[in-house]
Picture (cartoon, rainbow, N blue to C red):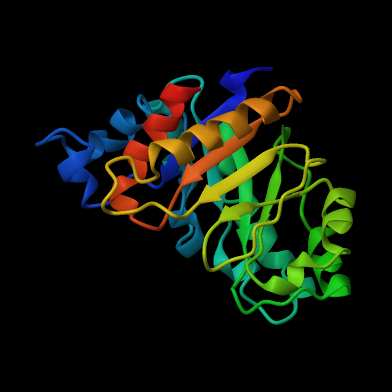
Length: 247
């Protein structure tokens, strides 16, 4: 593996301000995914967090993008926004069985995002992890856990996550804890500090630093998925392309 296994992108592709500074003027909205996927190497789909999509939609996304492109999917919120995670089995099964396997080899990690108020309770969280399937329709599944409460900095959390073959999301944010795991099977980063006054979102020095970190990770032979998301979202595509150019 090398830096070609470091995939860099943004969250979604239907964002109005990008029609001024990323997409060409007059580009039909039906062509935005095709355009974005030829300048980025991955996209995190946020729409699957709020809505249920059908198999033909996933198949259309697959067919509109280059062979090496990868989608990560944010799992439906009904699976994670609940008091007791142990009861999420039906919602997890509904999401995984909604047709995501139509993406084929373009299916990247599934992101399970938890509310900022959700605290780490080891037994209930383990019950949730035990519900996550390892495969769907013959495709191996990778699970990334986007936890947002300081209690997940517990020494119990990462060993538990590893035991179930999952990965903790590493977030670069003023609001949420940054959890790094050098032993993870893959890296999943959500970079949320883009600045509106900076043309590339992150200053050049910061992008250089993230590029060095990505190269170091690539040397371990494990893939990484890096997304510029939130913050000054209008700068996200420029930030992603600037990092890709460094890699």
